[in-house]
Length: 67
Image (cartoon, rainbow, N blue to C red):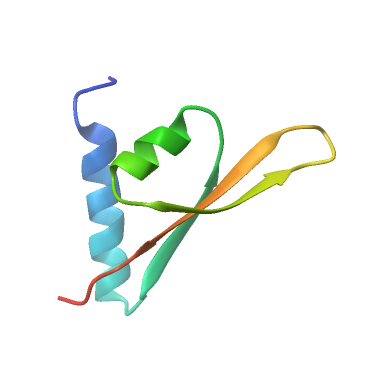
């Protein structure tokens, strides 16, 4: 389903819900190619963590604009 816009729609719904319940920002921990996707959707990389297993985890954040 890559390229169909489903992921972007889900993020938009998440941001809308977060806005409705009063959140000022949303966060995600992910890895791999997903980091590029989130950044294309306006998320900012805030931290990269290397777990004891060697797995690289990226922490991203996006401010939620008030309606």
